[in-house]
Image (cartoon, rainbow, N blue to C red; front, side, top):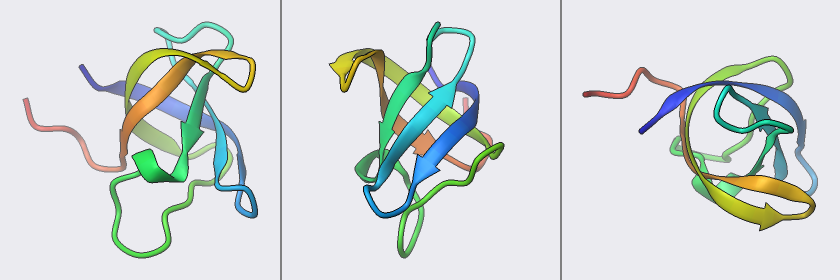
Length: 75
C-alpha cells in the first residue's frame, strides 16, 4: 500500500537515495528504477512522494522502495 514519504537525500550520479516514511524507521533505500516518471528518473531532497515499501536489506537500510510515484495513488 503506497504511503507518503519525503526524500531525505538523492544522489543523481549514482541513481539512488533515501526516503523517510512512517513505515520505514531509519529510512528506505530508493533506486531510480522504482520511480515511475517519464524521462530521466530522479528525485530531490525534501520532495514529497508516494512510496510502496518492501523489505531490504539494501546498502545498510532495512527497507527498500518497490514503487515511487509523484501523483496521489488511485485507491
